[in-house]
Length: 346
Image (cartoon, rainbow, N blue to C red):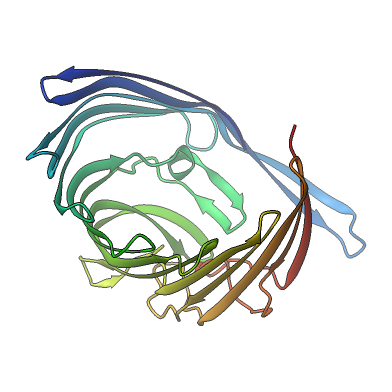
């Protein structure tokens, strides 16, 4: 599969009284997409008996662009800040030749955002945010038909764009000069979800009603002594398709991360990262349950000179067995590994 990409973004900023106004345009395109599949039949000795070529996509493109305006203003001596924005987009997808033949789809949508940040004191802030958006299906989702790394896939030219309403809340606090915490929560409602599903041995795409994803995250950072940085994070998410209360795809399992970085002296540093992932017993379509696992990575670096550094790293030191994702055809994650890197700058 081959394609070309191009993008353009123009932004202007102006002061309007006590606030700031930003407006502009951005455009993006993917063009010249071509996909050809080859099937071979071989005998026991590995000799090719039959070779078939199928043109899945001869020439496909997607061109989109949008104009936007965003205003930002602070109130009450910077104790409150409001950001509001509006955007209009038009996206056109076109296919020529290939399996699905000549097809074209054009969609337009309005999206926007509103955010309110309050700072009751210098060390504490809270943000409430609402975003309305949309996502156009990819050219592959619409027009590709053939063998992929996940098996045989058939696109769906009739797919509608996803539309979403997103609500976020964030609370941040500096407990001292050396410690800080932050908590986040979110609720997403997504309509016309583009879902990949299995039909017999093949994979297909469809729009699936409405989906709700909600979750929470907690982060903390601490510098107990000079040159030692500790951080930790917890995350939890849950996704449901509201039509039948089935599990959503691509929702990560609960996890925890602990990171320590220390620079005992100027030229030497080490970093430890441990990640614990809980069992995922809520698989979505084309996904399977995955067991819990722990990953421990350790790296260290030594600056021989100001321009030359040696870094030794070890990954998955416990040699855990795990999958790279919950996809039923996902490959296993890499086992224990050791790497040596040389960094030079001039």
